[in-house]
Image 1 (cartoon, one colour):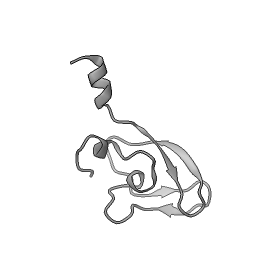
Image 2 (tube, one colour):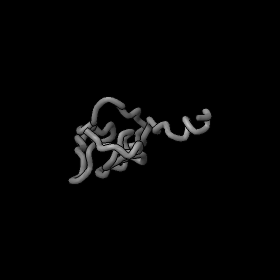
Image 3 (tube, one colour):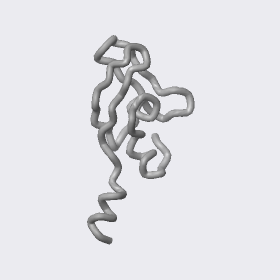
Image 4 (cartoon, one colour):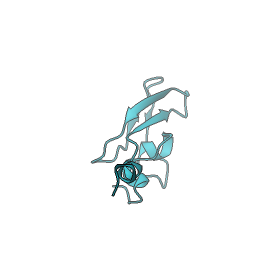
Length: 76
């Protein structure tokens, strides 16, 4: 395999979370070894939880899905 092929398979590890309540956005580094089920918005303090059917806050409110979903695997 070439390095280009390997790089294409690596998941993106940052995602911008956007709060649905106040619109505050922040770039966060996603964990690769656990799901993140809660996220405290730095703008308004609301605690975000995954929407029904989503595995984590990144899949619900981020602009990039979590690493396991990007890799075609099931999340936690």
